Length: 136
Image (cartoon, rainbow, N blue to C red):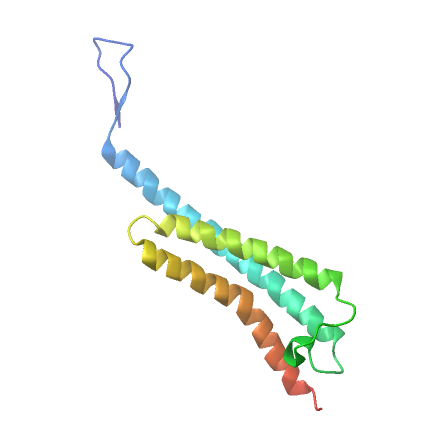
């Protein structure tokens, strides 16, 4: 609620502290939503890249399981993983930025957990499912 003095028109308006608290709360909710959407999009890109890699290497074990790199790495898979990394980092920073005011240690732990889950789990799950189908 803005208030001005009727005596002086040049006086700056006074902002009620309740308005700023409500605005900050609504912004935090929006930041978390943007962060979650970016993280989910990053997970989709990582899963698509891992699935494409598994589909290309259908007849044998995946290179990451054997510790060797393929001779000809797919550019599409690299682009999908790069976009997935960028999206996951942006999303984790948005989430961390909205949570980081009161407990910085907890915020760092949440950001690291989000990054590990989004960047590691899709490839791990696709690799595990791919390994089941291969009879070497």
